[in-house]
Length: 415
Ligand SMILES: Cc1ncc(COP(=O)(O)O)c(C=O)c1O
Ligand SMILES: [Zn+2]
Image (cartoon, rainbow, N blue to C red; front, side):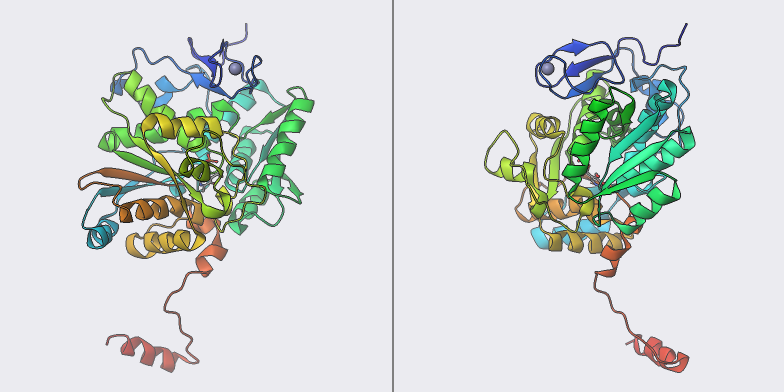
């Protein structure tokens, strides 16, 4: 007899019509209405003491895979939650209020982004299913992570990337880990469309690692578990939004803790988008319940350069249900936030990762937060991913024509 892949009681639920299905690792759309699916994991009997070990798999009792299944893992998760007192002081001086600010530094994951939390789960499933080929469209971080985890799992991986729009470090990682790469002339949205069509046409032979695959989001929800275990439930969680998978995964995580009776409140979720790629933030500002898709998204934060977010219903629900909001930030605001994290706190964020701070600062200036609020900023990816963006930041940088001149410069800096 084949051993079960999923824990007892795990189901799939359509987020549009509510229909329930038996867990099928290859079902990505509701057969009845075409809606997105989410995984339902039983929460009865889950206690803090059921969490054992470290990283994503510490929370195995809330993950859908059966206990016997051996994970494909690089010891992802368990990322630092860093109190940012220097930024708190800056905010207090600018606004007269001092919320407590933490950064959840997802750049500390094995391939440098939060994607690893999801890839450990889907690569485990793909290995168990012995799929012939794995595919993913990516703005870069999904590619880096998927390439590394499929390498470890012994799976064939093909990445579909928007040509010329992937940050250097991410392209390098994809090559390093040995994935096949298809670069398309077009945006991420075109790459995603190609993957979805190929998955459909292959009738399950090609397995997708994008976040419309609900099993991937199961790994990503552990961000919520780690935060809650370390400091309790914060008042706000601020998340950079591209496809909207991560913000919905984190919201799902807090809901599961609440349903299990492990916490007594939930945070407000704040989704941050770049102004040139803000289909959800624009819709929110206008009070619409559907995104305003962007045909030609543009931003320095290439990781969130997405005009048609596939997970928009889930992302909108997370923000609406939690009583949070979306906010959009300019590229200059993103670069300023990146510099602030780097130069005031020692935290290296790629532009998309720094957009959570940019969104927070914008709302703080508007008086959105109260004294004593606890705010967690998700810094989703590492600065080393995108060296070009770091080189755009201004800094005191001089050239000395000799070592003697360097000595004079050094001494002059004492004054
Ligand atoms: C660094 C970074 N931040 C944020 C996001 C957006 O996450 P999501 O697409 O789940 O909204 C991505 C996605 O590629 C990313 O790489
Ligand atoms: Zn449905």
